[in-house]
Length: 344
Image (cartoon, rainbow, N blue to C red):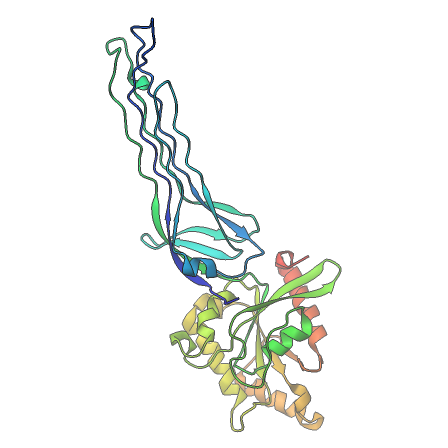
């Protein structure tokens, strides 16, 4: 299924039905009086979060969603039927914004969370409401109101405890495959990953967290270069970022320090809050470096990169160091109170 994480839709709540201006006419009742019923209320438009949906593709192709109008009132005190509601099921993590006002209407962060998007209008009043001591046969009635109409922007931001970032071919997909149940496409060329992949990392019984693998970033991503810029929003909900660096660049002459610095710069350009998120350095592919050169290579990278935070050396291909990293991540999430967001 194609991954779509943005869509614009029109939602239209139901209009209210008109009230009725009717007079009671029955044999032997010459002065029956007014008996016009009220119009029915219009239907509402709701959004419901569904963890079994992971894309907005349905809303990419169908743009208009309209609830039923209320029925008109009738004589004999018959009230119009209320219009049926409609419910739009969306992925957990969808942010819904009114395009005209730029107001965030809903942020669907929990399964089965239900939010009102457009409210149906009230129905009109029948003439039985206008009877008085001086007006025994009112002909007055009111029309139903118009339901709310909104143009909405849907934006999916995946819910993950840990986000992976790095250059293409840094080994992010191999890493998420090694530590979780995710099975992304892996190949020896850039931009193998074309959409976010989520995986559950299980540390033990009822101890787990969710990790997100995004397409690789390149310099200029914040301005639209490459693919990763399209998915940077998915890192905004993560509690911690793992910056995976290829310590042994695939192409000769590529400096890992320059690549790592480019990633950091792109984060800062895109979103200052994202740049300030807790970020750990993960030096990948250490198995490809001879043991007698490994320590010197790591030291050189750390000094030139100017890194002072948590750092791990791993080989996603062989699994070396991955388990220790996962235990450390879970301990951090537990300490900061974020682990409870993970899968049980």
